[in-house]
Length: 288
Image (tube, rainbow, N blue to C red; front, side, top):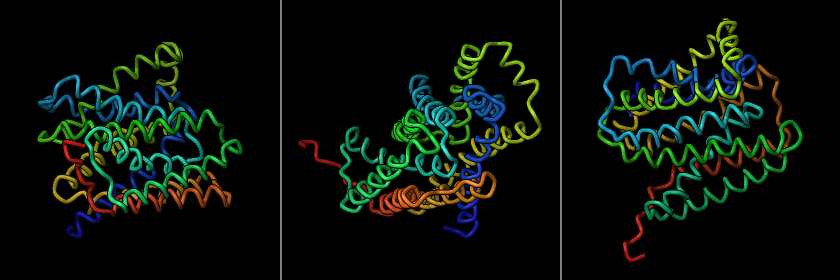
């Protein structure tokens, strides 16, 4: 990778790490449904200028509801300490490989299998800390995020050959519409309108960061990197995300990690590192 591309990859990882912080701040004023709806509404603005990519509506909605709506709404509902949330979401690598075995017959390499085991052990260690500063139901809801992320990753494979920026803009639109409907049902029209009209400058800036930068621009840049370089060179930069999220949360919110949770977080990141740095999985024979 060229130095400029490396810089872009690092910048995207930093943006995504700080996005967890922005989400937590925005949730002080906005409901999970409304915050997520605003995020994708802002990111969907380019739909006014770009055509819908040549992808079936059924596939577009399926990708949108998993990769975006399911992933980010569950984060907003179950958001735990920010640093921990950023680690749990990155465990999507574990589920992506597991689901690829079931969906595409991809056989994990021995190194990937080791990474899965290590990451799973780390998640179990984190489970051992549930009940101290976040609840069991919150952790269960949060785990929906990496699972949805993984399913969306696999569905995204079926949308190859289309402009990445255009695709992500329309994916955001497909999520924004039902999310606004959900916000109106869950919170009521009056409460939703009040939240929108009385939003503080701090929350407004957080939403612009989440929708315009973290979702629209960062995903587009990441897609370009994956288009121009092998995934093995690009994906490891995502390992920076939980470190950025944890460090930012420690500075802003004073978040501290007990020995077991810290060990679990580092174990998960270590397992993910083994998985993403391993060679690509083999495809099982058709007779298998």
